Length: 287
Image 1: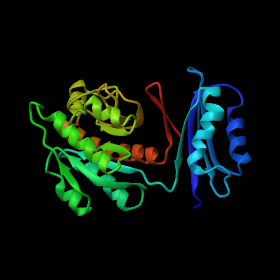
Image 2: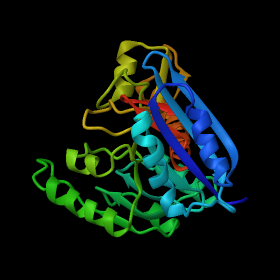
Image 3: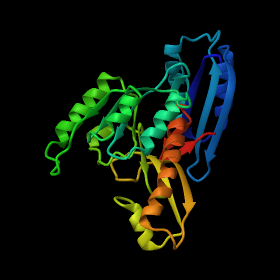
């Protein structure tokens, strides 16, 4: 496949935006291979993802974003980002003791389904080191004391590792720790979490027990970007499965774990394919 560039942009809606961006690409001898757009009519906001081939493109790659910002940024109050399909994002995985999401991500990575690099796996427990060793990925452990007295120190070490490994985004694969605002602000809308409920229902700890006690007939899983507010970041992907009065907290948990790994992998795939735009604590997820 030919190397392409992907533009993600959003701005207040007005006429002529698609024409302007398309003309910019074609006037500079770019060939558009994908274009998708959406207008939020409630917020009056426009979103677009456009992909084009770089063969013979007249503007140097490192200058494309500058040109776009100069020509359209202020004029349309437009937020623009650019990505290139031959650049593999570098993903760090954070885990605790449960292995189902970790195994699923690594299996998809080895199978070529996730076009990423995984330089490291980070944990607060030794339990899953054997999984990292099976896939020959460095595994780092920083234990957090029960009183959290060393949490700042641990996160400073984790942030330093992320910088050293040039990590682009982080996946919390059932990492059972609340991240500090400092770590979250270091990767805005680049930390993906899997929560074992259909948010906004049953936030916080033990949602399957909460679901059992409430007697619901559907449970779900939600993958979202992490923000300072617990389990309230922009939602990327969700799915559900039916349960009945016959289910126990244990059987609900088993059904839920199947959902969790699927929902998380879908969210990660959309992220690394640059198909997500965030705005007003929501996402636009392109097909």
